[in-house]
Amino acid sequence: MAILHEKILLDRLYSAIGGAPVRIVLNGQEVGPTDTAPIATVHVQDRHTLLALLADSEVGFGDAYADGRIQVDGDLVRLLDVVYESMSQRSPRANWYARTFSKWLEWRQDNSIRGSRNNIHRHYDLGNDFYRLWLDREMVYTCAYFPEPHATLERAQTAKMDHVCRKLRLQPGERVVEAGCGWGSLALHMAREYGVAVKAFNVSREQIEFARLRAREEGLDGQVEYIEDDYRSVTGKFDVFVSVGMLEHVGKRHYQELGCVIHNSIGDSGRGFLHFIGRDHQAAFSRWIRKRVFPGAYIPTLCEALEVLEPRKFAVQDVENLRQHYAKTLEHWLERYEASRQQVVSMYDAAFFRSWQLYLAGSLAAFRKGSLQLFQVLFSGSKCAPIFWTRAPLYTESKAAVEKQKWTPVMS
Image 1 (cartoon, helix red, strand yellow):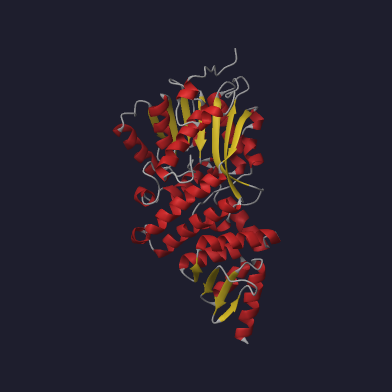
Image 2 (cartoon, helix red, strand yellow):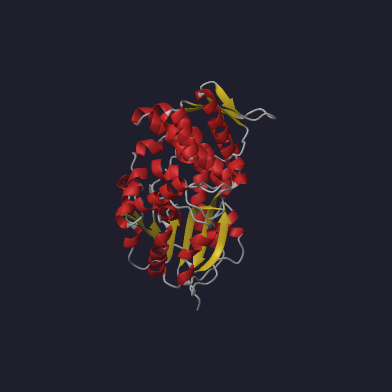
């Protein structure tokens, strides 16, 4: 009777994932495709784990994979690819438990000033040595820009920083404020290569200390100031506002606060830039990722993100989607991360390693599928002249093409 019951539960789970070409095994019972070979086999440890998968497949799978109660034979990214695809075709509605848990996380992890500090601490203050294992040498934890598909991660991250600077048409002597500066590489690049002065804000203590040390070592601490504080504490007037990889941490209910900070910083004559993970449709972000890896995260659609800008009458000058570049970035990160398994387990434990492995693999699958995007939005105040005549200067490695074009940032 127990075996029959387990088979019924397995059939129900297989139906819930849309009949993806995957074999699921429990206590000798299995379900899977009958007309094609499975791309992977998922071994479920016990009935309790199976029931958790049926109650909330996303959180149930994530927790069980991290804890070792689910084992995968085959390519994890490919497995997630086909499951995402088959489930998206069914468009199932989340059950009451999943909806309630998502709302509870949204309340519990609200990005208030205090809440943001706690959320950022849980994700970024894991130790610089951890991130150094799998990021590039500049410690850039955002989407890279690959001039060609086979570029190294190091070259692609430098190319991304230059891509941002060329979009903003940075001029020597300008004042830039950066909200959410990570380990400080972009601020240093802007100061070193474009001659601007930068104030960079971040609430991660480990990142700020790392960035300040780098600025001193490079002799740029007179040009770049790293401030351990929330973006809502930004004061002063600037020519340019930059945010790369921070909007995901803001939370939709705080978009008006961010818009107010931007307008107070650059007024009607400045330029601004938002680089952020987006999605192809409005939905709550992954419950498991918010629970285990990335607390407080909200991934907006492009339309939602523009709610930051439109009330302040900012004009959108350029929008670019670098989704394929983020998939390529994640391929590099995941490969480096998996190669560092022994070091990560020694720093933390096997459950931590598997949690982050699933986080990176799931993100890669989502960018490949297209449910996650990477948007870059260039904008300006109502009194700022158009930033481009054409987009041609963006696609050259040299700054010469930019410097040859005379440009006045404020309308006469």
